[in-house]
Image (cartoon, rainbow, N blue to C red):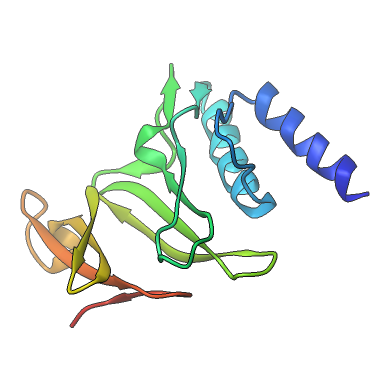
Length: 156
C-alpha cells in the first residue's frame, strides 16, 4: 500500500509542476507541504514551478539527510507565490529523526537565511522583516539559531 501511495504522490508532484531532480527522495510530509503550496498557486490562477524549492543537506551533522524547503524559490507565473508576503517567504527545515521520519524543526517567514559554524556548532542565521523584530517594515534584523540533533533553537 505504501508503494502505491509513494507512486501516487510522485505522480501528483510531476503533474502539479514539482519535479525534484535529487538523488534523495523527499519524505511524504515534505512532498505534501510542497504539493499544498503548488495547489495554492494553481488556485490563484498561477502556473507553479517548484523545481528549486527543495534541497537536501545534513543540516544537524548527524549523517542523515535533512530537507530544506525554501518557498522563495517557488515561482507562480500569472499568480502570486502563496508562501510569500511583505515580511518574506516561508522557510521550512525538516530534520531526520535517525529512524524513519523527518520532523519539522523550523517553519517561519524569513527574508533570507545562511548556515554558519561557530566553535564547531552549526548555526542558522535568519534575516527577518522589521515587524518580526519590533521595528518598522523597512528595517530588518538578524536572529541566530543553534542547530541541534532534533531541534533548531534560538540563541539568546
